[in-house]
Amino acid sequence: MAAAARAVATRAPQAIINDPFAEPLVRAVGTDFFTRLASGDLELADDEPTALRRLTDGIAVRTWFFDDFLLRGGEGGIRQVVVLASGLDTRAYRLPLPPATTVFEIDQPDVVAFKTQALRSLGATPTVDHRPLGVDLRNNWPQALSDAGYDPSRPTAWIAEGLLGYLPPEAQDQLLDAVTANSAPGSRFATDGLPNFTTMTAQDIQAMTRTLTERWRPLGFDIDLSELVYLGDRHRIEPYLTARGWTVEAVSTAELLPTCGLAPLGHGEVPFGDVIYLNATRPETR
Ligand code: SAM
Image (tube, rainbow, N blue to C red; front, top):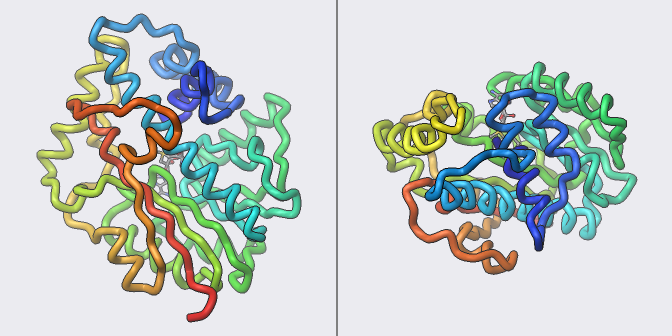
């Protein structure tokens, strides 16, 4: 879904992102609804553009935020990147990062194998030293990272984009702890989430995700998004990181949209507009 939205956002008249691999990757996945969305072939109901724009503009600013984060890290001298839950992220292939950069990517083994093969078939080549790892982020992924050559003494730019809600609450804590333990001074960490995810009830979240599912079911969308996320109490990310020595800046989607020259999304019933983005820095001296 994120890659399909990136394909739409890439074709927008004043596009703020450019992911030329998004559409062919979605085609390679072969799910009809997303292929039609990515290719611009969906026949939309009259009221549908609003929901679709919430998705595609929301993903556009999300992509822009994490692209900007990595590019700034590169400008600041960071040459080690870890993309947690890389999915169909193609930053190692499309961003002008310094060539001496090493980009580690972690996702589920099938996802990593699929994307690596699909991009190879497209003739795409990474612009950096690219090291994809198929590991479950609920398991001992820091060991896999270390085995692949990760150097915890070097400052690192980490991204966890569209991930945390897909982890059980205790795995979220373990992930944030592991990122902290493996971050040299000067490291940076960016992530996103729904600010009220911790206070929403399971019923709230199910209602929110089912709204979207029902909205798009007539167009061929048949995934119950509420089945993909872990519900229940979890720590709020910003204070969790602050308590562990990170300096955290937060920006909302509503703030990012005008920065990117996009119109406000308004308060619709579809949830994408409420996401906040966190940009955390590990101080140079602890
Ligand atoms: N960051 C990517 C992006 O923005 O396009 C992907 C975001 S997608 C919403 C969530 C990703 O988390 C999927 O690629 C999924 O495979 C991955 N994921 C979920 N649970 C995981 C786990 N336990 N271990 C590794 N990856 C996981």
